[in-house]
Image (cartoon, rainbow, N blue to C red; front, side, top):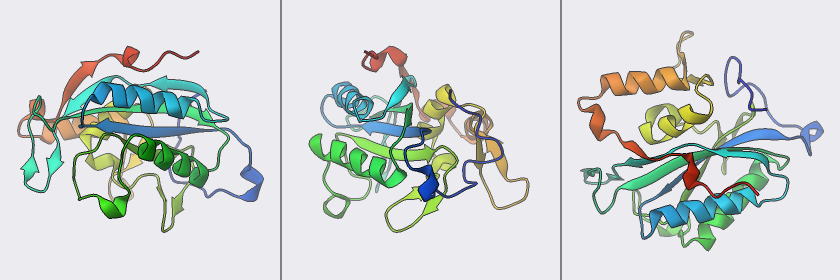
Length: 210
């Protein structure tokens, strides 16, 4: 049901023939404002309730330090994030799903990109990471998300869902790694791995599938 992505995430582009097909989408969630867990639960429930969504599942919940213009925050600090990832099958098209995710963000108090500071606090953040094996690079959407391999707070939740999925990590012919391999490399390369983040709760944080 949740496929091994084969040689890459980015091997094809959508076509008119794809309309109505179910593909597996992976979305990252984050919050560092107010009741973080409540924001994540509500946003996850809203995604699960979208038309055509099925086979929904969630990663564990992680706490991670905030990235700010002044540097990296502290775990347990006022600005620390709760992060997770969700995977689900959908028959929406990628841009339609992005529109739905932006609408959910807006309902949860997230300001439009043009009105919010870089690295600013946010009640909810929803990033479309991958959409099956689809590749897109236009003015509104890039798939796969271009910074998956750089972010512990994305890799750790993804490793709960698709540990063997492969990522391009550099431009060399050997520049591929599984999500789990890239996560392990990032931990080994860190001066203080404990500062990258920690498990906050198991996957039961997500609203139950009805």
